[in-house]
Amino acid sequence: MKKYLMVIGLSVYSVYSAASMNVYQPIGSSIVLGNYGNRHALSTAAGNPAASYLMANLQGFRVSFLGPVGIAVEGGGIDDINDRVDELEAIFDEDFTSSIDVEAIKTEAQSAPDPDAFVVAKIDEVLADINSSLDSADAVISDISQTTYVKFATTVQAPFLPIIYKTRRRGVFTLDASASLVGRADILADNLTLTGVDELEAVTSAADLDGVDVSGADVESDTSVYMKRASDYHFSVGYSEMVSRSETSALIVGGRLNFHRLALDQKLTVLTEDDDSSVSYSDFFLSRDSVSSGVSLDLGLILAARNFQLGASIANVNEPEFDYKGLVSNCTGLVGADKTSCEAALRFAGEGVFSLKETYKMEAQMTVDAAIKSKDQHFSLAGSYDVNAISDPLGDEYQWATVSLSYFSDNWVLPGMRIGYRKNLVGSELNYYTAGLTFYRRLDVDVAYAPENDEGNSGAFVSVGYSFVF
Image 1 (cartoon, rainbow, N blue to C red):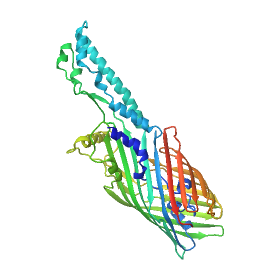
Image 2: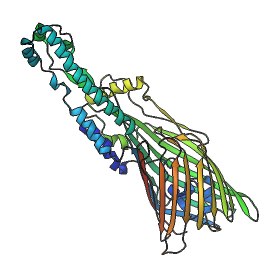
Image 3: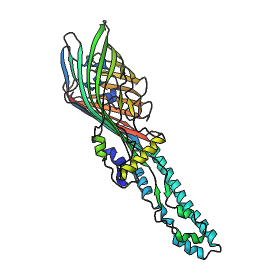
Image 4: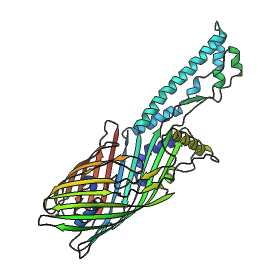
């Protein structure tokens, strides 16, 4: 059982094996800048599809070099998660049945005025004490399950991507690709139940104790670790173009087709089961069984002027759907930990805790952004806002609002600097403080940190990328 609990504690430090979807967990300078497209921050081209027009020179190519690579951790009770794991271990390791001593009850009954009444009362007292301890343990487990979870993520963009090419006719084509995976682990609480004491509960006299066998007395529970993961191989083709222009502003429109190879899975493991599951945690998070393919469409427009910029985009216009591999619905032929976990999954699913076979809809989301900026976008005060909330592949809701102040330097010595604030208006409702630096006009480092809120949730992002000079 201890090894199953360790996955909760260790997963905080296991971000190398997981990743996230860009839409929900931003990477690169978008951590700070949000959906605002800045020509000096190539990673922001992944937001509004029209933004790639701003990134290109008058004619020719612009490419990245390495990254960005993003890592994220989010969760409830992260600061004291090891203490919560220790609490669970102590509960499941406790010998609740040690107070059941039939021989001691027999001995005490011999000196009692009414042995039969004493035996019945003593058994009721012992069982009541055990059940009281179980109720206290249930309360702790329930609290842990409601407040503790871990979500870990990372995104890896393919080398030299995105590639942006502006034609002689000023149309801009964009190619991009990335690999991403996101995982989450939760505790599902189940009451502790005393078993193997039916004979003891049926005792009505001292003589009945002679045939009582409590060697099988034990405490059972389906309290489990429930994990979900989604990994995506993502390739996109985009096009943007200026459709009108005046002396003071230009209107740019763009679209992007995203090709997804998405692998979704879920796993449940009962904590009180000491045997090993046939599928290890590393195999679960890294496997890509039951891959679903789909295409999503993004649309966007930008009104760019000398000292301001307005943008609007809609991601996943067509809302493609993807199927989870899901949990087994028939436990026949399974043994050991796999059988125990399968039966627990069926019970939790029957109670409506989750579905054995889920479907993920990549929901449409509209985002608007605005910025006050210098003519060359070296200085910007910008904000972006997701008009509606959507759920990520693991079911967590996101609706970001961001504000940022940035300076991108043409000086090789003086770094570019940006600071900002982003808030998830739904779901975890975390408030992130963001900052980033660009060294030698090439190396981008961006971070975000959300201190623990009233619900006990906190999180952190970090992203590093190296681009060619623009």
